Length: 259
Image (cartoon, rainbow, N blue to C red; front, side, top):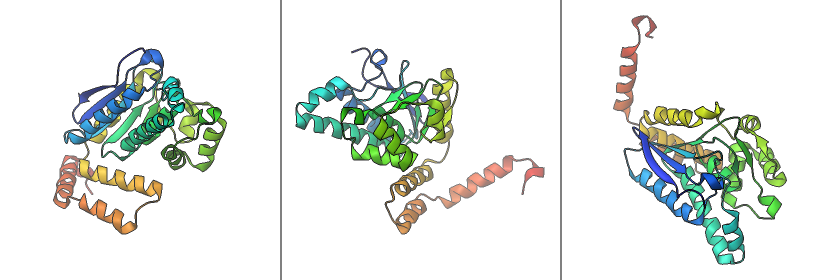
């Protein structure tokens, strides 16, 4: 296997960076990578100084998904196969549910289960070299429920069915048009743009942002009641803090601009 296990660093104030680091193997995710990725994410969540996370990859591929050799080996041992699928699904759920705002820097192809990891992120930056494919149907492999739900929630039922049923590869332009990507930039600018977005988000007060993320995700899943969501948002409201920030912004505006 070319490369090493995923890397964790802190490139900017309040921002963490997790990098997939097997570029010679198209950043295929090995079974041992799953625990490392979950550990890195848990460490970021536990660090109150971290507010945003960039998920990136080294090399030309974002990720070719779970290593097919490990998948085939697991299929000959049902318990191992179930454990591998559960660990991958748990990582995607953890990415979606983290309080951190997560930006994916998709600088190249994203395939298989890695498409679900990308969809679990909040924002996804791509470039002309980006493309995606979900080949599970080609293998006769039922995709786990969490991935199917994210496909529907993020892309809509019609796009989800087309991509899952046909195993078609689509280009960056179509990924943008169906909502898989948030925006397209030049290939050399993908990571810089993702980091810039993470820095911008990290400058926001973290508790309201995390509360709004929680309610947005719950709304996409169709779970929770309006009173429950109202309580989540109310608990994150710091009235004096909001007033102070509004006053600070207004004081920096030119007198002619003040309303």
